[in-house]
Image 1 (cartoon, rainbow over the protein chains, first blue to last red):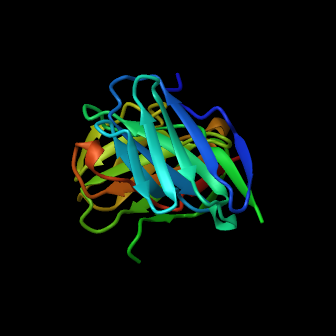
Image 2: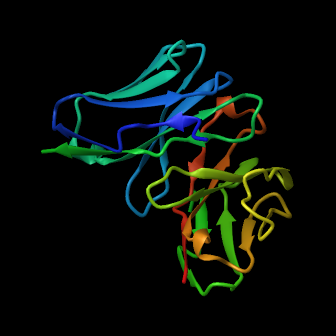
Length: 112
Length: 117
């Protein structure tokens, strides 16, 4: 069963506009969440994380929002740039566990 | 280099053949993970090492899959008698921290793409 879900396989956004990528999870034990970015033929690279004690974390153009009651997190990219075009994976972990659970990814295309 | 290194990058195997995939983690990283990523899917957990100890192998899909990290550094994922459903990208990741996952990120290698004919 998929404990982390990314229901939008793809997203297209104009350069300069906001990109919003969504992620839902089912396991209430998850307490740490990350976003990874992946270019073709490369491994995923870490983008930003958030602990469950926070509801927002910002790093430059990237902001992650966490809504624990809805078991939902989102990644906002403002302004979007063509170099942001990649597949974005949401991941979650529980302090009691040994693994990160990944969503299926959202392919973002930023149109110049 | 300073990152996680995996080899081979590409491997084509005939069904029934044994394969071995190697991972060189970042020096000093305590934790090492293997993930399997099928086409169009997210990475799925296979196994986890803390130093040389394999603490979790719950994600290994069958007893044909075996992983080791004998000296707490380089790791090898071995797949015996490969089947077509084993075709995937096998990702290795390492982390500086130990068992607690919520204080660190994973650093991934580029992956080994296995195609079983």
